[in-house]
Image 1 (cartoon, helix red, strand yellow):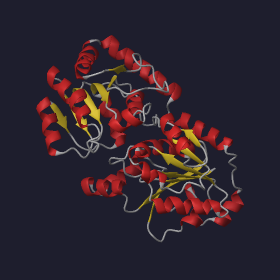
Image 2 (cartoon, rainbow, N blue to C red):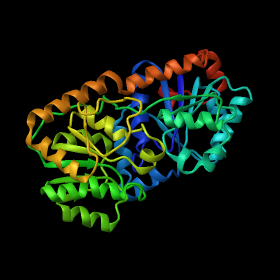
Image 3 (cartoon, rainbow, N blue to C red):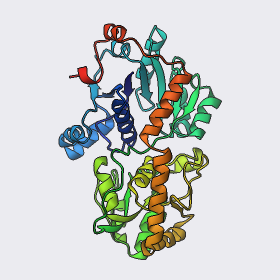
Image 4 (cartoon, helix red, strand yellow):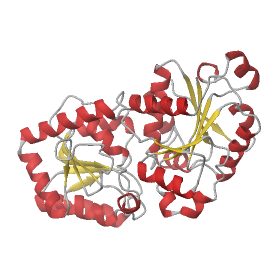
Length: 383
């Protein structure tokens, strides 16, 4: 089948975690013999920021880290209708321009033979309801929501025809245990500052416990203000900025533990949805301790796959236990890895996607028809 993914960016993961998941899904589709291409705006916010901060080398590196993946940057004159006409499935991400969301929907309504899905991996359905309500989803065949509570919001609001839960997952072609080397530090956290959405949580569940225990380690991510960097340094943790997602498994392997700190809009308004870093960390085999969130869908086995900490004091105690008890650390690593490999890989999500497409009655367009209806032939024909 031919898949087109409209995304904020595939080539840049600067403050854009959905790129991690989409890369894994596309690689899995390609491995199964399907065709897949991403379309992203040439002036996308994440893309512009990574070039500004890291230079064009960051975009070149995407091609080296993810050979075979194709993303086409489009401008105002891009022939969207002509392009989607040759696809079997078109998936449009929630962070796209509302006018483009409407435009692709109209292409479906006006005779498009492709299955059209809207993919939401953000909290705006709860935090910016009017913006999501204003999107024209009437011509979309279905909604892919990255958690059951988000799916329920779409159903209750009547946004779209029908909605399906489609969690993010780990790209296990990338995220897997690496050979352990001499630890570079006790703790590592890979996460962005988050517009103040978890400032207090980062202080309570990372900075203060690390300071109290005298732990060494590092923090990787973007958009940290100067005062946050100063507090990290004062705690004994080193702030080291952006990291390419392809480098994260090696960084996990050189630390004793990591933490999971969800953003407040998810814990308060959309419970049951962890960050993608939780899937990736467990897939890498690093022991993980999480700040509170409600695993309402039973995605993991709390106490076996990872440890919960209810507050900063409990986080410090859990950190001390994991660092001191090698058997506990090994057990958490093995159990978390087992759950990922059993339930939460991008291969599992592709299986689920095809189940959704079957329910929607999706059909593959004949090769000759697709070729006649589109000037963009996916994968091997894109130059």
